[in-house]
Length: 90
Image (cartoon, rainbow, N blue to C red; front, side, top):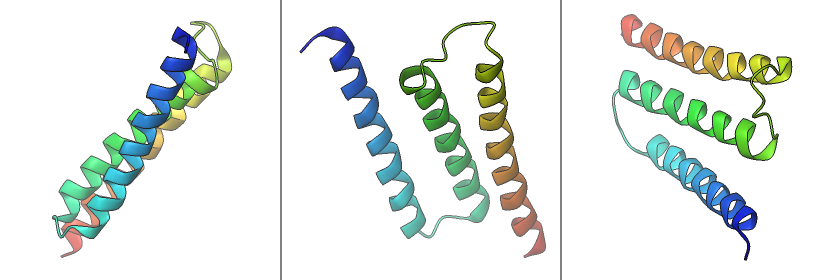
């Protein structure tokens, strides 16, 4: 197995582990704010891994890379807002 195949395999395993971790998190009875924070972190990490290793967006000046990075900042922020709003409503 060459270096590139090994890297792709390790990233895939990390994505699977993060997915399983988020599924486990959904089964636990943690407070909403903690769950929202962890889910937002998992979404951000998974997004950055996909952008870097599977989409090949590593160039600094790429517009698509900028848009995708913005997406993976906005979505976790919305998750945090939703988690915080539900915590305030209780």
